[in-house]
Image (cartoon, rainbow, N blue to C red):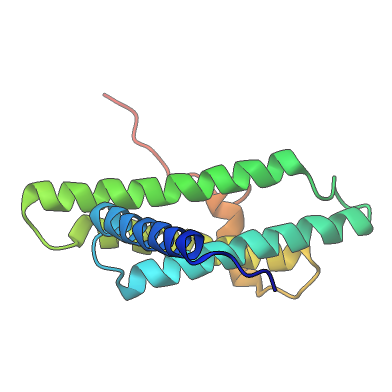
Length: 155
């Protein structure tokens, strides 16, 4: 192991502490308290990204799709950043209105549901059995199935 002079070690330690404090302040300001809905959303986002990667790799191996693609992966990361940007907007709006985390948690629960559906869809892409009810829900949400609700014509 390389032994650095004490001054350099102290500098890196101080820099690490400052980065940690800054990151903590920024995330607390943007998202508020790190509550269970935010923890679940973060974990589900990581799982969704992993299962999406796995499904793409599986499809590529079986010649069922284009396989792994850096541009698709990049779009996935950008979408995840967008999700957390909307969470931040919800939190900042809650603060501006002087209320509890109503909007932030509402946005988080919405995206938790979407992430769960996406994970289920990725499982199906990997050849895992998916209950028909979930397959139908995913198809309707993606606009590939079901019937559009009847609309009344204007008189």
